Length: 367
Image 1: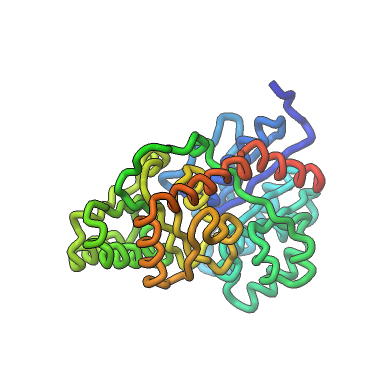
Image 2 (image 1 turned 120 degrees about the horizontal axis):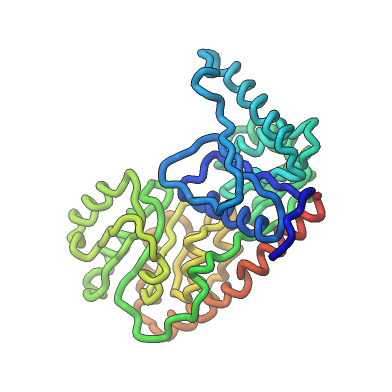
């Protein structure tokens, strides 16, 4: 058992702990640093339903203002939120604050002034979506330059920010979920094509269903299974029915045992228009699945895959390219297995012990 440190205290700052990729990364990192002997607090603006559970011993603080403090003026409310967050840092006295996602990074840098805490900002998604306007991009350049640390997930992200920010930033990957660290399945593959993700416009599951329908007669024994839920689920069900594949397109909703459910599938699809570094993609590669993924603007797919080596990479939104790639892999088991075996090597590259040690070394340097 590691001795608890009385000096090293880290704060994680995020909107909520609702179940999502960035939130899971934060919870996993918080648990890791707690095991390493740090005192850890998790500060979230809100508390949502269906959140990740924090390990015992990690203090949770809600930073939003209470109902009695809410004013009719948005400007007054904004400054009250700033003051409350600043007071949290002064009271808790963390050595380092890690923030992520859009305006949270701005809030962390501004409210850390005068507290002795060192803010570290992180961009986990597509930078252009987190900071979509010229004003927000300019503000990111100014405030990030004043942060103690800057974490990006892809090399392409450097080019979005000013030269000073890009040069100071480090690239730190997300670690692999331990549930997906297992020997690759080498038996007969199930005739299933799988995908995992929220059913929204960005994930573009519509393209998957249309491509599957175009190949339905060529591969009559296959089904498409899309795990997840979202506002477009009824539309996807309607689309599958209109294309005559409703009995072969399965939408099980959100499930807990993803690794077991997809581990023996023949093919995994990621068809998003934009992503940071997709955790679902990392997990599919780790299981050794044959993967087709879109080349997202952030470079997230490029960080994980080399076309023709550990999967196939296609342009975002290109349905014909998806059909061609699916036909290629479903029709060539030897190729699919070769790509899948190479994909599984990501288990070593993104093993939790290796990746967490990188985060710890960076934090130690800043502290």
